[in-house]
Image 1 (tube, one colour):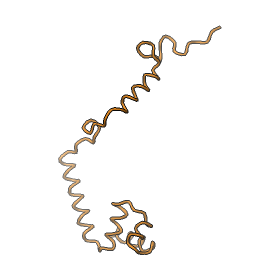
Image 2 (image 1 turned 60 degrees about the horizontal axis):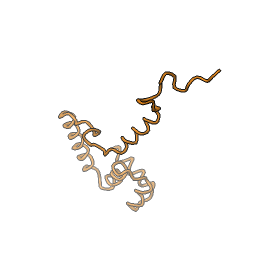
Image 3 (image 1 turned 45 degrees about the vertical axis):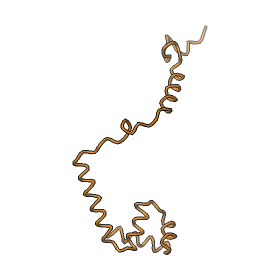
Image 4 (image 1 turned 180 degrees about the horizontal axis):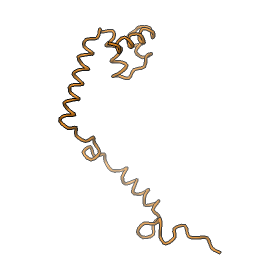
Length: 110
């Protein structure tokens, strides 16, 4: 009794009998070597309505930030827009960590 073939009737093989797994690897290598095409892979263009909404939201955010006291604005921008940790904010602003946390809480409430 013989073992059944790994690829019965050519299943799992590409043109010329090449195993698909090998062909896939070489195809993947070719894809990886292609230069990134911004138009092909970029984000789709937003509709005029979506652009208007985004613009209005940016203006609202800018207005809200401008109304905050400098101390609150500084920690909020460092945390939410710059992605700094509480410890980094404390070092940058030269205030205790607890002050950073309470300033953030107050800024978010406003």
